[in-house]
Length: 232
Image 1 (tube, one colour):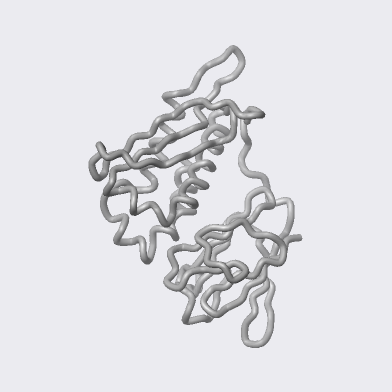
Image 2 (cartoon, rainbow, N blue to C red):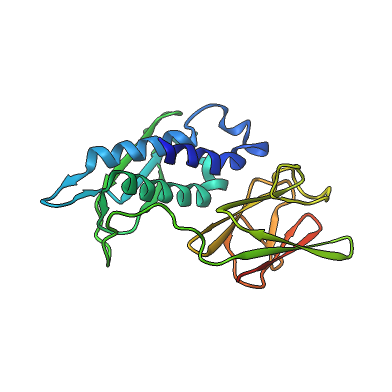
C-alpha cells in the first residue's frame, strides 16, 4: 500500500543510527501502521451515502517495547495521523473528526505483542473524503551559515533531510553533526523539524528539541552550524 511505503520512508531516518539496535526485535513501527490500517477497515461504518472510518486509535505496547518508542513517539504519532488521512482518502472514506493517536503501556502484554483499539470520536467538523496532501502553498527556505558566508536551500518538497551524508538535502560539513541529523517535513505550509536520533542533538533558538514546529526567523543549530528558517 503506497501510504505505508511512504510511512516507512519518512520514518527511515528515525530507526537508523542510535535506533538501529533498538528495533531489531519486538514491535516494529510499520507493524503499528499496518494494524491501524486494518482496524480502520474492520471498524468502518457504512451510512446511506458515506462510509465513516475510525479516527481515534489507542495503541498499547508491552512494558518491554514501550520504552523503545519514547524518543520517536512525537514523530511516530504525527506519521500515523498522516497514514490515517491518506488511507481514508485512498478509500473514499470520511472521518467524523481529526485523527487522534495515543500510546499506552499494558503490563499484560508480552514483548512483540500489540493491541490497537479503534473508535469514532466526533470532532467539531467532520473530515470528509480527505485528499492527498496538496503542494506546499508557500516556498520556505533554509539559510545555512558556514565558512563566513550564507547559502540558501529552498524547501521545495515535503521532506528535507539535514546531515553530513552527501545524499542529504542540506549537507553540512560539520563533525558535530550526525550523518542523518534532522529532517524538516512541510505539509500545508507548516514545517516541522524532527531530530533523527543525532549524537549531539538539535536546537531551535538555543533550546534542545526532539520535534518542533518552525516559525519564520527560527534558528536551528546542528552541531556548530547555524541554519535560519525563513517562510515565504
